[in-house]
Image (cartoon, rainbow, N blue to C red; front, side):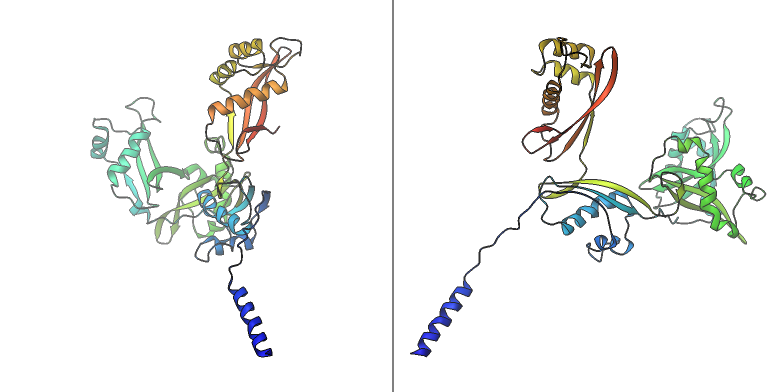
Amino acid sequence: MKKIYYLFILAAITFASCQKQPVIAPETYTKAMTFTLATSDYQLLPTTAYPYKSFSFKSNADANLYIPQILNLKEPQLGNGSTANVTYTNAPAAITIADSLFNDVSYTVTTADYAAVTKSTFKDFSPAQTLSFLAYKYPTPVANQLAVITYTDYESGITPSAGTLVTNSFLYLNGTWQKIYQISPAQYTSVNRGSFGNFIGADVPNLASYFNTFLKADASIMDTIKANDVEYISYKYYLNPTNYQKVLALTYDGSNWTTASTQATLSFLKNSGTWIADPTVYLTLSSADYTYIGSTSAGTTAARANVAQYKDFNISATTDATYWSPADLQNAFIALLNYKYSKPINGQIFNLTYAVYKFGVASNATSTYTYNGTAFVFVK
């Protein structure tokens, strides 16, 4: 009898163990993160991905590709609306040109070349014609191909018949020819290499320092530069008995041009289960925006007419019929956002810049809103 009883219990246990257990989905939550990628973060990626070993990204495009993967693996339960400000390392810029023998990459434009490109008797090129010449001369360029071209530059001349003979370097990058920075005779002279117009082996440890000085002294470069911009520098290099034309890539770190790695920060938002690059909208109100606000129900009738006419918000005195209160402004901006953005992303940020008028003085003000999935909400 005991055997039958034990068999019954065993069968009951076996039956129970075969039943499917309910699957409980992991609970999700939202989170705002700010962090710098650590070595362990890069190694969340597959071993076949190059950042797994380099602990850096070769470009911002690669950062936008790999960081969402890292975020999904690092915090898989984060819900939509989560944000991440991620600082990462940019790999030092590098380039290997296809052929650096000076005699192979240099060329002087001929009379026949001018005629073929300009379709005229003029023997000079405008900047656009120079690019046309490169396409004519090199119909099947390869990636990172270098061309050092001597030609008469029309733009540098006083008249079409008085151009200036120049030598410039062009690099075939990302499918297009681009004019790159070329060391001038005066720059060689400044570092005691003017007699030969080239660098030698002893200069190699100092090249980055030399080029940093040259670039920082060049207003045409520094006037528009921003951190993480890359400049490609073409220079002559002599290794007995051969002359080479080489290219060194430098990255601007915000203070200097360097061959070292730099850091950058990107923002991400999780939407519909996917991390996307920062979709923040920066909106400066246009004349049409003020006109539209004048047609809404925000504020008073007098205030709407005033903003439509003068393109600013009167915030001088509460007793003024054209006064815009903080609540009125919020209603106006929410109406504008609903009008301009029919498909906002959940958690998306909208930074507005608008004109205000206060006691005779006009100035700009800012206001921030977010979309919570159903409506635009004032943040600050």
